[in-house]
Image 1 (tube, one colour):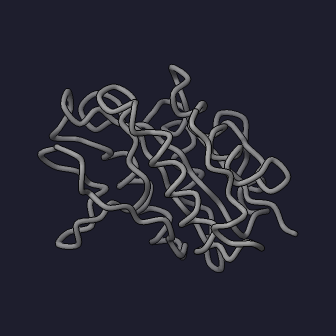
Image 2 (cartoon, rainbow, N blue to C red):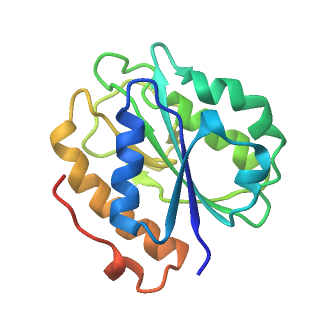
Length: 183
């Protein structure tokens, strides 16, 4: 079985924590977690299935480690690769920029050939604007996590999204192979 490469950037630890929680649900034997600050293009290119985690900072800014890797990610050929995204943001404090970094990352990897899975409903969120929202569809390009305002919803959202991603990645056992956790 080929592994899923999960790559994240995190300044304060929230995105790293969510990455580890995703791995716990999908299975440690299936998912290899990497900090984007410590990787190369070749490491990403070595996976057919990828999960990228990116928080949005302040007024729609990209997290610092992702920002340093941005030119590299723009050069990766994602043809034949399936990618799921998750993003962290604060929908009330920064409602005009909610999950913008996830939307920007999505646009880069789709332009380079990635097939995206793991779209997520905008229902249950309150925000003004987001580059991660698919216009007119009521969905985000990936899982939306708000550890600042809706931390109590994160475990349930992770459980549901990981089941969805397992199906969409075509993992053996599909959604039934995903651990439902209350963390």
